[in-house]
Image 1 (cartoon, rainbow, N blue to C red):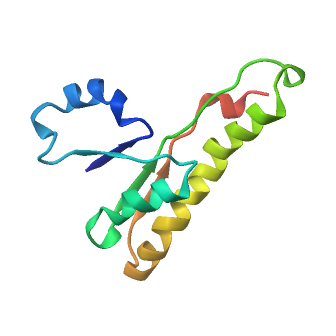
Image 2 (cartoon, rainbow, N blue to C red; image 1 turned 30 degrees about the vertical axis):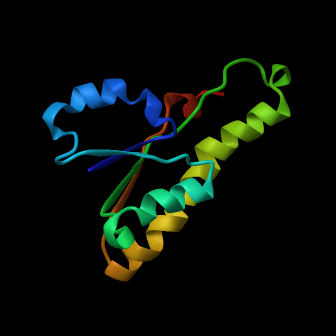
Length: 115
């Protein structure tokens, strides 16, 4: 199992929760869904780039009226929440299709249902 984080410097709580599994059955790697190079580097570090299950839960939120949000902030949100997932899927799906196996699980937020 590989857990990924944009900032592995903040992995202390995850490492503590993993306990003895860390380094045995769990690895923590750097991956930023907004950076194609980061995605490729992470996947290239996996033998054969073989991913059986991708669980995508990267996401950011935004609260407040539309007119109070900057366009840059909204673009950043879409870059993470939508295009980040697209980047990941584009990298893992070709191998899954070749192997005719694999699963992609996308975790979203209740905020997607609120107008």
